[in-house]
Amino acid sequence: MSDRPVLQPIHPEIEAKLLDEYAAFHREHLMHAPPLHEIPWTPEIRQQPAVLGGSEPLPVGKVQDFPLSHCMIRTFTPEGEPPEGGWPVFIFFHGGGWTLGRIDTENAFSSNMCKRANCVVVSVDYRLGPEQQYPAAVEDAVEALQWTHSKGPEVLGINPSRIAVGGSSSGGNLAAIITHKAVDLGIPIVFQLLVVPVTDNTAKVGDERYPSWTENARTVSLVPDKMLWFRKNYSPDPSDWTKWDNSPIFAPDELFKKSPPAWIAVAELDILRDEGIAYGEKLKKAGVNAEIKVYKGAPHPIMAMDGALQVGKELVSDAAAALKKALYPA
Picture 1: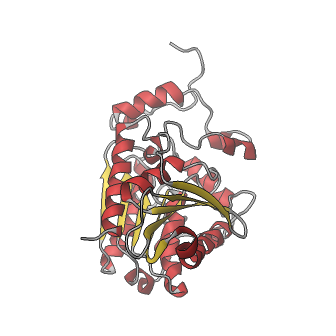
Picture 2 (picture 1 turned 120 degrees about the vertical axis):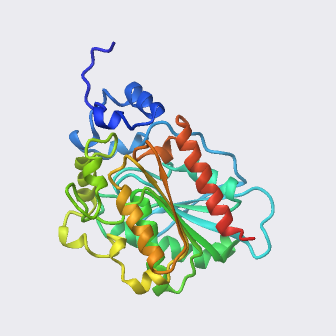
């Protein structure tokens, strides 16, 4: 029995639903650590993994870094020869509440998508708050899309008509926004892969639209206060939260009707669960094919925990299968 203080306990009402494997990991690695939003902020925090329990990157054909105007992108190219017309490409935005993460953050997930879905992956090291606030990350996401579409064929051998986008959490927010921005840019996107996405920055505990904010208020990992801390780091002005390039669920119906098919993963014990489901339902209402998968007994960060949790491995495998099916339709 440790004599260290319990700083992140598992509440009994959550423990009754929480996957045993996650509970064991939490007790061993997280229970005695101070919550991020309760310690003084310093950019050096980004040097640590945003989430513990990740896997090692898989070997791919080539990894390259390229500069954009305000950030870097890292590209992963498969082994072997590209298909006729060039490689399909997946533009990926990492999670971390628009505050955490760096260019190395999702090397494992990016390499998994590259190898398993046989596509080039463009991972975007977008600018972060609190130093660079909204809309800096959106601007970087737009530039990454434009660069991939215009420069990708020559530099990476990609097929500009086979572009998919995706992201996790705050990165899922940016990916969803990009699907709408792409309409005005005239850039075709064939698929969106959103993992535990932030779709509505007006959501809060007690919000009847999204019961998961209240049901999961005592969850582990992404608790409401931590989410609000992330939100304020990125977007401190509440008047921005209803703009659709901040909360993509508020994009007009006409843009939803032009959205690409979607695969949306949500976690049962995540406060963001219901806004992710609501986003998928809005896509369906607009006539878009959207698959929504709920990972039972799981909290928010499982995608990045595929080195430690079976449910994380399952999510990564499911995501790769959905992406490959979209990029290589029968």
